[in-house]
Image (cartoon, rainbow, N blue to C red):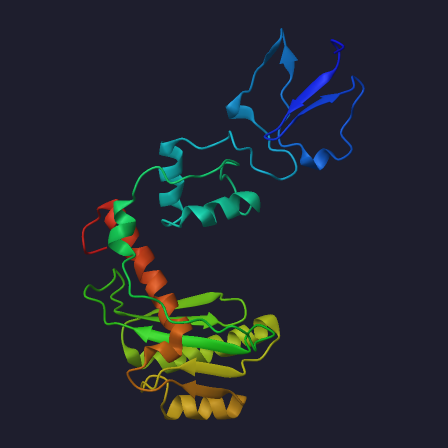
Length: 256
């Protein structure tokens, strides 16, 4: 073998390449390391991934992993790596996040029953075509602004959510009227269907007149069957879990 030939070792074979061999497609290169004094040195702190791929060597330290897990509201590590690949969070290190230890706060705040079956085919084609909403409360402890109820509205198409804090249930109708009028004007689309439970907060004279005037259809779930209002119930659980997890992690007093 000539001394200037290049040798590539794989799991199944050894390939001898000519000295002037060049890669046809640079997109397959994950990492380039220069050779100096017959040594290849890799500085993991300054690794720049090639082709949008996260270098398998560039992993965060256990401290960084825990820190960003807490900063992002105890989001799961699979989602954190998606945020890295899409460069969706400013300041988030471009490294691979891995579970290094069990998060006790997540165990305390994310316990739940088995989820309901999801719909296989979506019939929604644009934002505001259907809004899921639910009101939960009263909470055991009032907020600093004396609020005890939480109204959550979720768009079926984008799953974008709006959260409103209420002191009493009576505020629900006026808040919904103001919200629907404002959001329709903002994005120049119309709310067509509202899906909610059969509670008096959504089924009253004020809401009847408003929905009739706007041409909005309402779909009510059967009493004591929260599975039919699955999107809203799941969003409620997600918000409550995030709040409980951060409260458990911060060790703040119950008043917060």
